[in-house]
Length: 413
Image 1 (cartoon, rainbow, N blue to C red):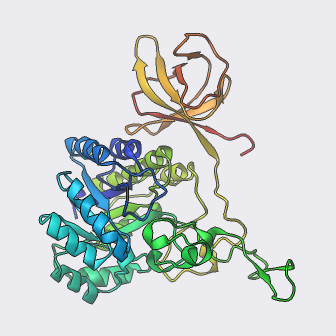
Image 2 (cartoon, one colour):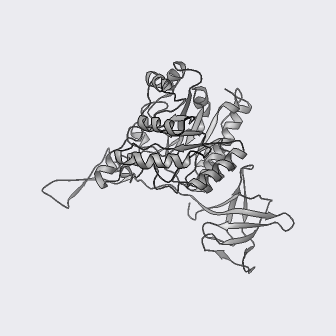
Image 3 (cartoon, rainbow, N blue to C red):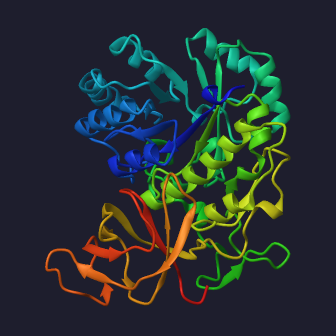
């Protein structure tokens, strides 16, 4: 497989994240519209934002996929029909769909639509893959529950022009390919219609019927009570196996995550993928890429099902909290080469004397101390920037470019 045939696919929860993903090296992005996507809590894109986002991506040679992957009920059909008619003129490269009826409906309204089968459809064997090929589907988003050996078998038993997409990074759903009823059962928020409350991350205890208020911890070998709490998937150390298995699109989870998350994860995977294709036989994993993905909010990592069925080592029984060692403090909007000052949009508090890291799509990162900082509007020198999205002028130790990001390590970490 050559570099052009392999795709790094990034989440785009809103327009800013779409542009960030493209700038930081994604080959393609996937996003939801205002409805009918399984991430109702993400910002998602309006029709006008979809037009702007697809134009931005296509101008840079990137692809855009729209998720329409809810399991529709009867009352969804009419509004979905109207919605598809509204977006039929948007230049979307593929529709990610799980419901056969919705596939049929999309084809009726947008006859030339490219259909990608969502992971929600639980695609786990080559006979099912052939069935979907017969229905005109040309890309399968594989179920997360497949090993490398199973993926290679599927690749060897399907037509050459059928592509395989698989998740390589991000949160893992405890239910089979995300087909979960727990959220709906407990608080009537349907995970299969975009409103999952993530009850798999909650802490559970046992209550006996005649002893209300007496809670008994659910423990497994004294490790704790988060019995459904999976670690996050991270395959950055295993990209050769991903590529050589026949997967052609490496998908990052995270439409609910921040632009900082998108930039950091895409940047690290982009560097690793490019290093592999530059010299496949001499490729060596660089630990700096793993260090970079650890700098964004994450849980402990797992390789999921790729090598074996997950065990207790792939769960976190102690806590559902994220590891957050770094804060995203700003994004560069402009830079003056003559003065060495950058215009920075603040995202979290930063103060003079603090050490920050600066990274961008075309560099690793550099470290500097904050020595000079001014309020852009007033021109007054300031010692700290506590106001969200405050525009600042900051003296930079090295040249920077628009869209570079600033982060700082949290105290005590």
